[in-house]
Length: 334
Image (tube, rainbow, N blue to C red; front, top):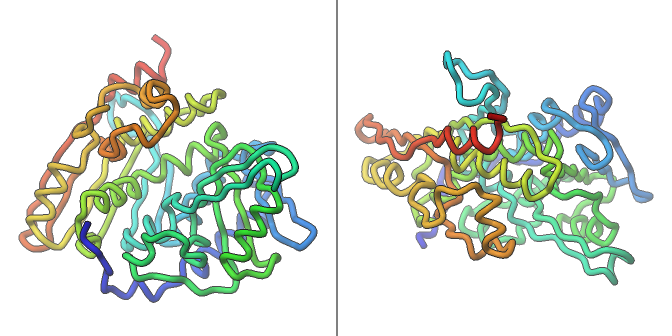
């Protein structure tokens, strides 16, 4: 895999500093966003955005922006098509796609605790958001050549219960933060806010697939995307299936890169239709592999349709397609 250290000014930005005002707004306006605020004895702030509190679309949009380290625009809009296959879309744009999506938004920090450590049930979550760049526990940060240094941090956990103290302590220690300078936001996938923030990863999924393909990340200049926003399902597996299907079969991404050869290659290799497991609902695929993500073809985790424009020539290449029929069959009553 090609090592990539994007030589651009964005490496000098602090994703935690940029996200700080968004985190403050979420906490200060908790009633408006239908989230609940908890504080540990030491002062760490925990935002419940779907465990016991209802959360909602507006909370999910703000949390998605926090996940991107304040470097992305995220909005909900209605489809402008006369006969849309789905009415509600999540729209994402960033002019610093590598830092926003991989340096902040990507769920790459594994946080676990045993039953003995929690005094009850074992705990596991993948942490996403700007605090990852304080801890830099993932090899990805060596490739990005990025480390954030800020006195406050925010982490998002896609899990159905609040984190135990042992996990909070690990985050504090690895991020070198005082307890009252950490905010953890919890967004279960089966909640409305959780569904929104996962679907808002449509550009991030494209960036991660680009990384998996071994393309120099310094090539990526701009990223925009849309994906349909499904209603959450009460069953956790079905909820996860819907959010993945929204991107794999309904996600549309437009990337701008520096060179023609990269644009042509990404248009050909990036779409999810290149994967061996493409064509079935994600929940069915996941179940068929005994709930083991690592048995699923990694090529599947990609947007359905891509356009890739090159600054070298001004040309744009297109690849993939949206599978509206599959999504309708999963989400709509006949």
